[in-house]
Image (cartoon, rainbow, N blue to C red; front, side):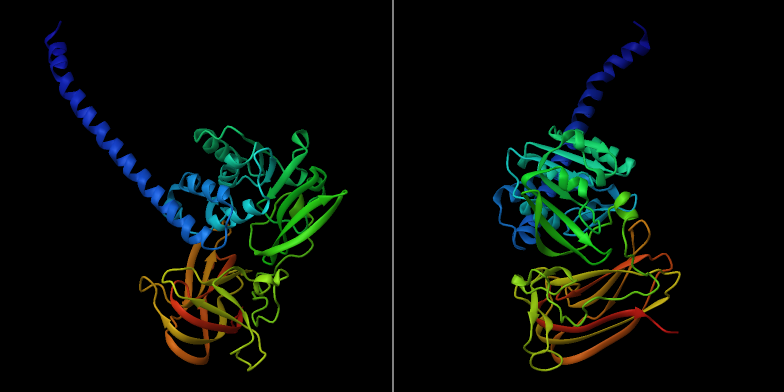
Length: 417
């Protein structure tokens, strides 16, 4: 044995100890990180899912068990347990957790169900469905996303999720029929091939409508006809491929606008008194008392008593920064006892967030904050539009603050120079 080998053998115990220490430190770090994600996920489910109205215990348990952070890019991972859509690349997004839970609950998943999902995206919706049903068949039209999602689902050991690349408009005929179909992208109308692949008595949930004016609808197949129930306003990325080619109405990004900014129209599912065209409405409802135009005038009232609780309404619209340099934004508001939430950031604002063609966030512009008690007042401002902007979302409400606030006459238009 050479002196060099002898020297190496003498070092081995030290190396082993160092390696073992590093291994234990790494294990402790991993356990700490896992615990952090578990806590954030539990908090998200309670505050953003259960408190927002999801009651199906099986669905809530699936949401608690599904590691959403594993399905988002590393650059977005810090936001994984926020109730928001996040970009996942290829101009696509992962849906907010509440939307995933809501759509899952609405199809009433059963252990014997075979479910078709259109729009695999990150794979998160399929992962939530997996423990609730017998099999999930998921189709993604973007090869890069589909392959990545399949790898993630395989790594996380979701054995009953089957993925393929293809145009979801055509469905998955070889595996049909399906007990349930869930569509996580928006066509103008439900594709006929999907209806044909649904069993008698089966249900489909799908966001349909114009690009920024969509409604989630539940379709039930009875005697080869569809019973249609409108659930709530929503905002999904468009279904590409055949569905987009057949779309008859497209938004004009050179003429940005808000729909139903005066809140005169109630949503089709008016049982919860929500305004038409606005989605993600929380801790708010249409009222006629105290409106801007006097008795009988309808406006949107926000009310919240728990600091930090979401109280908001959102709406998307098209805007092209190459065509529109500034947005003329206005709204009327009245406040009563408004106090900040858990932090200085939790005050009422009107926020407009701009996104590029990949749906990555570019910038956010705000009007506010609004504080205390005040009578009706008009707020107006010209907000700059990033030149790379292709769409935007307006968000307004108490946004974590407490008190009551009335909003009316929200308007967005290209500012005149």
